Image (tube, rainbow, N blue to C red; front, side, top):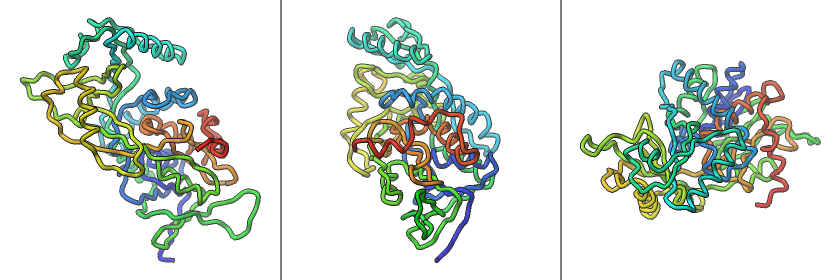
Length: 386
């Protein structure tokens, strides 16, 4: 073999899930290796909107039930990680306003408010005038609004980098390479064991446990595990807006959308405001398109005519891991004593990154976790239509 590394835990994937899993493992005294084929946060974790919301995809009840815990962990990370790494990842709690411009939109807002209240999340109902008063960026004829104070923002690239650096300070290491399979013992048994992973260059990384956190690329692991991993990529594009000139008014400080049209305008404490986000299934194509940019800007302009004078500072695309049933796969893989999956979070990987990483770390270190991830078990993939 060209080279062999050893670790307590081998984590495949250097996105938010992999890096936070590594961080939480080091806090429990374990020393993991993170294997990344490109660079840390080079995928969706580095180009996501950084909006901590559980409401951007299917609003799956099992996922939403984990949202309060993940938000608490995010607040803890915002308080502790900068002191460890010196990286401010831009965490900010600010209002998010969902606006309605029609009676149908008002009905949709009311239904959304009722659903959230049933989950224990109260959101404030606003008149059109009250919604307009919250931000000079809202220029549409708003009929009503719904204010949320439970959807913070951050810079997802900085958070992922900070998590990995904190993990390294705690004893984790990073290896660059593409994983092509698992190392297994020669003897067969009812339960299989992975001794580590094989890399494309012929080297090995050995460990007591393997965590597969490769985002949409986790589908490749189905052949290694002999178990379905029905996760496919969905391209999401974002338009970035440069700060306005003084004569054009203040910067965007909050998040907002028109519920009838979707999309979001989101202010960030660090970095440019963003217009998010498109969705299309084009395989592993991460190119940006004029069509997506125009659609995003048109929808945003329906809410704020400031978009017409805004300067576009960039456009990015990422690949979200979409599971077959809209629910993430988090937990031990059936038939394996020491292999775990952590993928399928769709567009909410940053939001659910802390609770996922903490839960996997607890399972590995303690055999149990305080978080209710039973509904996320990869076992259901064997019966989920693809």
